[in-house]
Every structure is written in structure tokens, then in C-alpha cells.
Length: 352
Image (cartoon, rainbow, N blue to C red):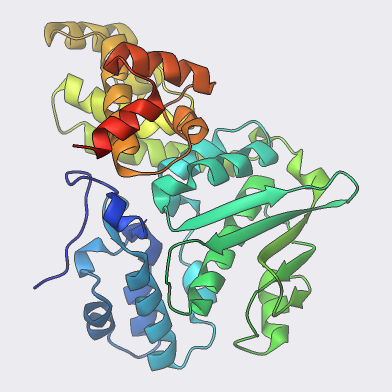
């Protein structure tokens, strides 16, 4: 039986498939394996990863399959630093709407909080968290795999830290270097290689995997970096080109669904990325019998129902994911849509 790619046309993240991750997590995988002298095809087949899922933001694979594919590639190629090498071929773009939400934040701290808050959109199997004790000059960024019964995943942890470093360099600036990098496992290659890669002291067999960061760097405004706007523009352009394949209402709906987590969804933004004037888009929508406000409300209702049914995402996170500033706004919306609170709606959906 061939492996199945879970796409947005399926029931998204079902309760039985919470340990999933987007296919974008393997971006650059096949090219790197070939560069190292091996054939990626049998490795992907053994891991249960369809080649068509590689690099795809709208396809989901099992997190265990990601682990198997990356760990086996390191063994077959003999590249002890395979995860770190693969990270060099990835960046914040693999996070899709999560990355857009981070890049739309006012400060580095807000951007990292957005990543932590919405990371379940990319994969419910992982978490990222930033803590900054008031009596310390340093903050701590921690990465964890929270999926149940996962096999050893040292290469995947290093892949994740490598990508995290690139995200931090985009948010803070290209000259950013952590105060230190911490890994919960022993060194897979000479420690000096880690120090060269991360450009900071490396510590192993630690209680957590992540970085220590200067607290002052978290206060930096994101608008200071032109590269941030370039990445946001590239992401928005990519989803706009995909959305533009349907009718104006279908295109606007697709964009609205992808832009909700950024907190910047508005008529002007959607119109700009469909290359039409806002009043022109309004006329097109009216011709199809819908207003932009009604369209956004329908998208929010559908997304709320989907996440309440298929995930255990905290309601505070769901509110932000839908573009609401407070959880109370989500509660009022659910009562209007479904006649019940978000918690009661979740219970109703799971009893069906």
C-alpha cells in the first residue's frame, strides 16, 4: 500500500495523526543525499515518505517518517553532520504562515512568541519556547519534540537547531551569534565542528536543546531589516499565485485562509496580491454574492471548526491563529457561529 500524503483536502490534523509535520521539513533532502553519493529514493520509501511530499508546505508526513528519513541518510552517507547540512538548505520559508506571522511582528521577541504560539500549524509534534528570567542578561530558546513514542532523533534535533539559527539570524540580523548552543545528546561529530557551525561555545548532554541569547537582542525591531520584508513578500507572492487560479472569491478565500495567522489580513492586502484595486475586488466579490467581511468570517468559522475538531490547540493560540487579539473575541464568535462556547463546540464535534 503506497504511503499517503495528508493535504488540506483531507481532515487536516486528525486526533490519530497529531505527530505530523509539513513536507517542507524535508526541503533540500534529495539533493543533499545525492550530493553525498547516495540514492534518496530507497531511503524515502523505507521511511514511508512519498517523493511528491518533499518540500511541499501543503502536504503532511508522519514526524516519525521525518526522523527515519534523516537518521537513515546520515547512516548511509556517513555524514555525521547530515542534519546540520540539511539545515543550510532550509530557512523560515518552510514554516509557511508561521514564518509570515513571525516576520510581521514588531520586535524579535514578538516574532519568536509568534513562532511558539503557532508552531502547531507547522507540526503539532514540536514546540519552541523562549524564556527570559528577569535577573539574567540572557534568554533561552528551547526546542522540543513532544510527539509520543518517538525513536532517537539526534539528527533531526540538529536539523531543527540549524534552521532555528537561520531564523534567528533573519530576525535579529545576519551578524547574530548565540551566547551558546546546548544539545541534549552527546556530540555526533567533533565539538569544534559545532562551535564553528553555530559560531559560539557548544555544550552537550544538557537538560535541553536550544540557544542562549542576549536579552537585549530580543528587543530589536524587525522593521530594521530589509531581508525580512523580502521574505514576507516572497511568501505572499507564492500564495497569491496559487490562489489566483480560481474565481475572485475563491482566490480571496485562499489568501484569507493563509493570511489569518499573520494578523495583517485586510482587503487592501488581499487586493494587492491579486494585483487589483480594493474597490475592483469588492465589485468582483459582490458579483459572486459575497462581501469581503462575510468571506473572512466564513473562513474563520471553518478554520475554528477544523482546529476545534482536529487538534488540542489551546484556545488562546487558536484565537491568535484566527487573527483575533483576545480569546474573548473567539468566544463571542463561536457563540454567534455555533450557539456554544469554543470548549463546548470542541466536545460536540468529538462526540459525532
